[in-house]
Length: 235
Image (cartoon, rainbow, N blue to C red):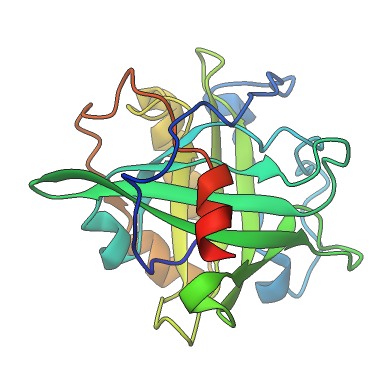
């Protein structure tokens, strides 16, 4: 997923780029929570009750609600806007666009990379990230661990990202929602409780450090950042 070499976003066009694909699974809220261990860390296939999200479901305007990485936790109002590079092929390459603010500073900073869906059997909902521009050569693997909708039909997902050596970005677990307040309280509690049942040592340590992100409303009502001018800048 995204890596944090910082680019000033004031020169970018601001527009809505992530068009939600409004699909909730049959079960929503706490009873709909399903967790899997990322395939790269699991010796066993996921439970039959865990299914990958439909193609295109992931392309939504997300807000980061919890993170285990202290670097992410130090940011505020972090937004994530994945979109298909080719809208005619939503199962293909993905624009990986993240934007955020720093404490005491309302400037919006942006990072951009390209995600490639993993073609290996058993690796559904796994993406291979490649950085661009000054972080060309930075790579990581990004796996969806949980996805669904809370009791109000608000989408959420949980992800795991592997360590990125080039940028010294540690492995991490993050929780996203299309509401900057996050999933409703009961669903959020169910997600955390399900994550705490994981016994894989690395994941268990990351779950223990999950911290609520700062979403203070400063970007509410403002257009999302577009990737179009950023691509032109980075080349």
